[in-house]
Length: 279
Ligand code: GLU
Image 1 (tube, rainbow, N blue to C red):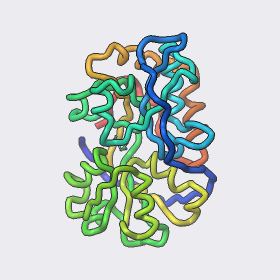
Image 2 (image 1 turned 120 degrees about the vertical axis):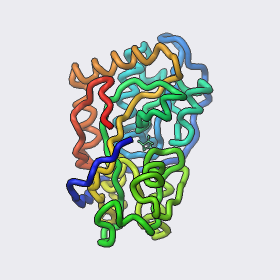
Image 3 (image 1 turned 180 degrees about the vertical axis):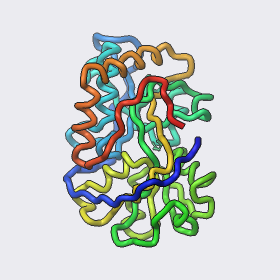
Image 4 (image 1 turned 45 degrees about the vertical axis):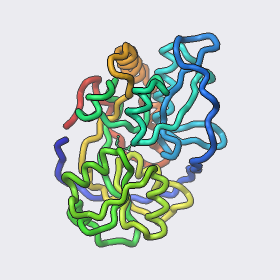
């Protein structure tokens, strides 16, 4: 993946209430093939990313959840026929390969490495890698400043890979299983920065309990083209591409980005065209 130069920096910490929980267990899977009737479809999402994929006592919410619901509907499944499964960054390819889920909508960047193992519909959102810092930290002003800092990212994410290979090879990279674990580390100063997509970081920064504590670097270090992961060779890819096109055309995409990214004031990019992957 080619990396774009830093063009602008901004520090935005918002104080809007988004409750976060990342616990609880899933219902047992009752099968995921076919459509309609009493059949279920198993769908992978994140459980701990406010604004994108979040499990709360009230249910599941976020942009990825809305995209997944829209797709499921087009495939013939109502909301109550969706079996939500947590697909952590490092587990996604395996879950698709094993058939644990029919598709994954989980801030899942399309990359050539992943395309060797799974197929992607989309893209349906363009995000950019950024950093989340403590609000009072003025020592990190550019990606190069991350060298020699304790940087947290999640195992199996492009963010961790990019840091190691390109962005800050001398950073002390700590890989945690989830972003919520990194967030705790940032809060109690076990780490200096959390790096992943700006879409995800904006969601964290805007949570009420973190009011005034964190800021985004605004570095726009990469292009992250979010795709819907499916099993390699699956005919779902074409059907999901059609559903994504419909979602943009009928205004549902715009409605979903506004509803889910509005609270975090995340400046989302326009809907990408299907197959238009930005390097
Ligand atoms: N979009 C990046 C990825 O797919 C980072 C976010 C994530 O880990 O889900 O790896």
